[in-house]
Image 1 (cartoon, rainbow, N blue to C red):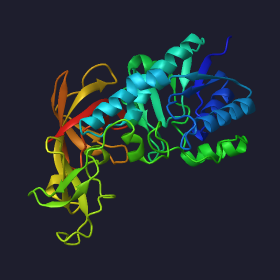
Image 2 (image 1 turned 90 degrees about the vertical axis):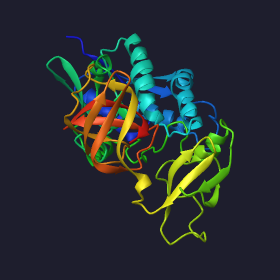
Image 3 (image 1 turned 180 degrees about the horizontal axis):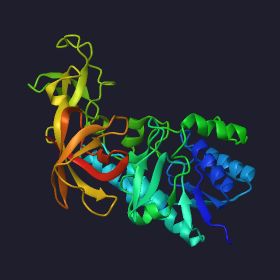
Length: 361
């Protein structure tokens, strides 16, 4: 019997390395694929892709598997990065990693892998796939602190049917232990953080290359000027750090937070106190909806949702739903819901899908 061929996205990190190792141990014919998605400043001090490729090749060599490097930077610029710039220009805060998954890692990569004769693809994401009644479900990972289903909510039935997540049942510390025991070069490598193409570089410096800087006033909701901002695109709702107005005369000792962006007047609206009413929302409107099952969930049912990755599930109800947009109401007011981010809906451990937040209510 011919072994099933699985093409693993080897990123040069510990998670994808262990994913490849586990699949090989399970008897699959494993091939590694290193994806290069960004090359605008490949020689820049902040770009780690060369070292990542070296590490990926080292792991492939250790496991005795083939590895190929493929360049998806053109697809990335067209399908992910242009949307990233458009959203910032419009005053929203996008999450490009979500579109990187749906458009690159599980579309361009999946297509390429099928061309290599793959039966399945696999990545080092912390999530799980289950087939139930002929439908494929995306489930949360066992390690709740590492669960990445939020970033995968735009995957569809065809993509999930061809995808394996070998780490979904493991805790992060177990993954590290497996890598150490196998003497993989990535066993002690630090996890990558932040947006994939920005790396560790200063965010403002990066964004300023592509979008013009437009400084303006910081004002209270009443219109009192309390400071100057460097450009609305550099700030996100709920932001506290970097406002440089903590010691102003108007301050009563409470910290300042970004509460709104007035795009027409180029004004950043700031408020004092974590629980200021402008920072608390009963619900949201989302569009660009995607439902993993291929059909819409029931309205007026108790679900849970996340409006950002590092957030506990919040009980909610889908108030209104059509093909274009949805209204989601929460049982308790939510803090600093941010347009441009994704609202992702869950029913227990099952990720149902979600959409892009356009407004708060």
